[in-house]
Length: 275
Ligand code: SAM
Image 1 (cartoon, rainbow, N blue to C red):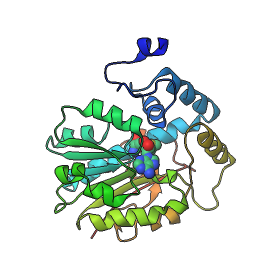
Image 2: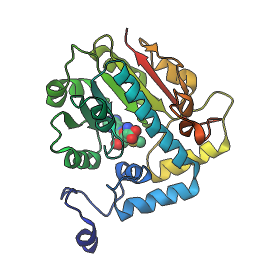
Image 3: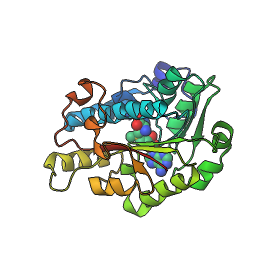
Image 4: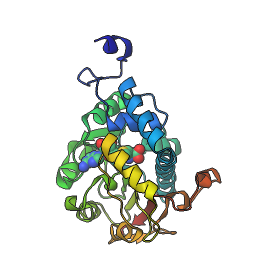
C-alpha cells in the first residue's frame, strides 16, 4: 500500500504488482529507462554487483538493435516485427525507425504481461505502432493476429527482430524451427536481425558460467550458443556482411560501439536477407 501511494505513476496499469520484480523492468533500469520500481532496481543492482560485465553486454545488445534497424531502414524496410520486445522505452525500434521515416510501422510482441502493459501505456497515441501479448513460439497466432494484419503489409519486406531473445529459449523450444516459421511467413526481401548470448568454441571463460548462474537465479534461464549454432539459425537467409560477428564488431558506427571491448565478447549479432 505504502509503496503504491509513493510509487505508482500514472502510466503504471493498476493490475501490475509493484512488490515483485519483472525482467522487463529490470532490463529497462539497466538501459537507463524510467519504467521500473524499487523492487526491480534492487534485483538489477544485485546482479550487476555480482557480474559487472553484464552492463556492457546489455548495452551492446541495445547498440546492435540500433545499428541493425538503421541498416534495414537504409535497405528500404519500413515495417518491423519486434519479437521479445521488452519495454519500448529508451531508443527503441519505433523511435529509431520513425526518426528516419515517420510513416514506419512497428508491431511489438512480448509474452510478459508487465512489458505489454507498460508498452501499451507508453505507445498510446502512436497510431503506427501496435503491441501484442503473445508467446513468439506460437508463430501462427502472432502472424494471424489483428495487430500484425492491421499494421504490416505482408506483400512488402518486413524486418523481423529477435534481439536478446533466443538465448531465453532452450533447445527443446526449437529456436531453429521458430525462426524458420517466421522466415516462411514473410515475403522475399524481408530481413532477420538477431543477437544472441554465446561464445566461440574454445573461448570459454569461467566468468560466463558465473554470469549464467547469477542470471538464472535472479532473472531468467539462459542458453549460450556457439557461433555455428547462431549461423544455423539463418538457414534460408543470405547473411549480410560481416555475417555472424561478436556484437561490438557487427558494423560498428563509431569507436564507442567497440569501446567496451570486443575480445572474448559473450554474444553475437547478425542480419540476414530472405532471397
Ligand atoms: N528485445 C528487447 C531488447 O533488446 O531490449 C528486450 C530483450 S529482453 C532481454 C527479452 C524479452 O523477451 C523479455 O521482455 C521477455 O519477456 C521476452 N521473451 C522471452 N521469451 C519470450 C517468448 N517465448 N515469447 C515472447 N517474448 C518472450
